[in-house]
Image 1 (spheres, rainbow, N blue to C red):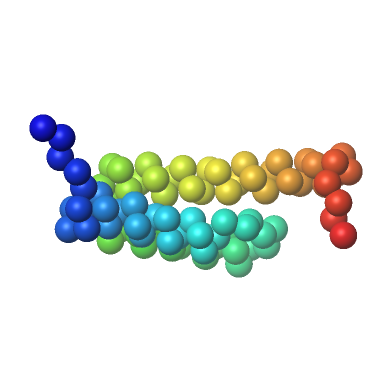
Image 2 (cartoon, helix red, strand yellow):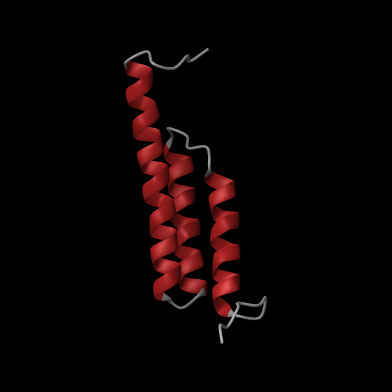
Length: 85
């Protein structure tokens, strides 16, 4: 018999917290304040869940994805493959 997660499970709360975190920072900005806030809030989420492995990996994945996204967008802008206007 499969167990389904419920709103009372820690995993449910971790995914909800990380999803909210991702939504807040989903459009990366090239400024120190954005990245400082992203890192600070990610650390706060990880601390809140006592460095739970799932939480650490999800927060890390969000940070990596946003870093990759800004790098990709930057490369495209330099190559003029997307409009900046």
